[in-house]
Length: 215
Image (tube, rainbow, N blue to C red; front, side, top):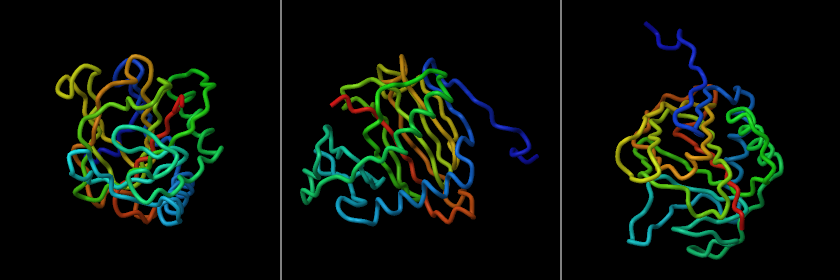
């Protein structure tokens, strides 16, 4: 039986962590995709490969808005690259983040979102278990998915290992985590190639993560 016959519903994965399937409708997905393509292609500070302190590279490539993330800090310029200034963070994206928090955690959020990390995953890209702990603010993290479906592994605050919950994130899905779940470890162990909506015209997966810097 086709699993799509069964509607996917809002799920509280852990206290403070909510998955809301299909939050972005197709027109909103296309609009966000076009913005991501512009940010990735237009200088300065376009799509880049992130290098780790040990000399390795992340398999997901990244674009940053307002604050440039590098392991494990933020800067206003690409300090681990050519020194280019980071693109600005648009107000409409901040409002999208505030709406996401209201729609999932049911609470107003006054602090302005001012960081966007856009990660592009090809078919073989992965993201190891980690915590979003480089910000000064513990405001909720907003995660939006476009394109291919992935397994999103949401864990605990103490360790990178079990217990964790695997969640299937599809194009248009929203995941928000704050409160007691704000510093939970999470990662992407698998991407399913060619599973995105054909009409979107995206090969691979984009994850748009919005954060409040507190900087």
